[in-house]
Image 1 (cartoon, rainbow, N blue to C red):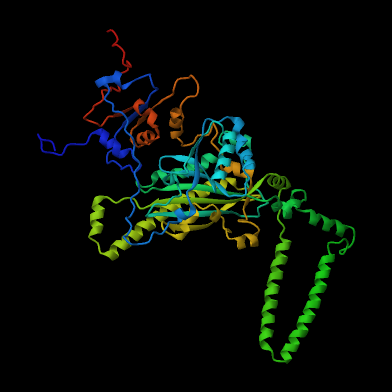
Image 2 (tube, helix red, strand yellow):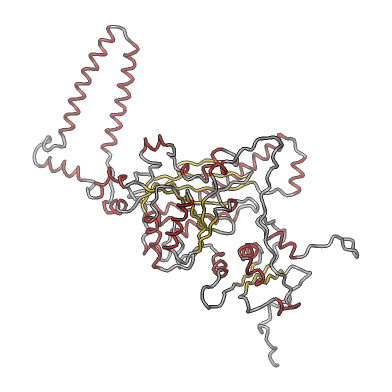
Length: 557
């Protein structure tokens, strides 16, 4: 308490900074202007500034731990689905400045990482940042994927997040709900999607990654404190080389070859000329013989008044007729395809692929007046209001999912294949289905061994390395992506030669970006930070924005 005025003493700007710089940052009512400067060691020191530049050494930023409900005394411990599946084997990839030589590096990486265990590549985005993640099924596979990635992108920074479960964007906190959108191919897997070669990726406006990440910017309009996050996940598993066996002829056979053969046979002067009509005639004879046998057996049952087997036979004939009609219509509808595109699809290493877009969010914290209003409600009214809040969050998640769905339409080919949103599922924290978020084997639609045996694989969607490289790759040097923090991460990396240590200078009128950058600064460089808060009346900063002399002497009049 202030002795002179009797009013509570205001907290210093450093106390407010410690409160706002944590992972559970509270939104301020009036966003002040913040100026953050990270200078090179030795170029400037806090001792030289003295009282003219009021700075404080950067204190350690403490991560806010999630508030867990205390266990009931005497109740048995029940492990969560995440604990049963084990820790996530996760890597965070920070891109560096790329050149045109590395445009096709991801395709080579896919072919070098064709393991039998499933793994996933993820694009994740929040209100303030976007990132690239790599998830594996085991520690050995994670090591293999990391070594191969470092071989293709030696300048990219890779951080291991295996021991940090809270950093996993698929980790669900209590009160959160997730909307999962499963994508599938609209046609058969041997028909390709739109492929982006190396020249297309490095051309101006030709990188599809920019449009996918731009669709995640809809989270900017999300309410503060809602924790909304979008993750585009590609779950992959090596497909055997035999998957192309039924359709390998389509790479060399013209789609109109049968029509041409029929026209040639008719031109030679005979409807029955050639061998194409022999199976048809044999099928007709077999059907006539079967019809005679069935008619004779049915007549005997009718005379014996065995109506039950007679009705069963009638139903079997009806089902068989419908099936034969469906097969006939399907056989006459032959697909038209481009042999060159099919050849490009089948000539590369392929993967079973499951594309999932996972949108996560929760009800934002309520203001104090709303909390007081709900405290006065009856339990039924309060439950009705909470249900309305969850419904509102679900509508927001569906809106974000629709934006990402539109972004993936750029891989569609009208003459070949396309992606479409097959189904959506809403999962809440604590559900049994929440384990499928981090379990790669259960991400496929046919994860049960019996379904895999029936359908011949974990999914019907098969993509090759070039198709996957267009969906997931590190950004090119000319790609304009909303990854502001990449510049800060590059300045924070220690130099490996005798060149000076770089730094950065940032001005943020809303102060949230400045606090995000503060969390990226390692402990070894905390004393190299100058943080100026122009709303701090206890430590005013003398800055004249109209001073054009740049701190020099006044010009002579």
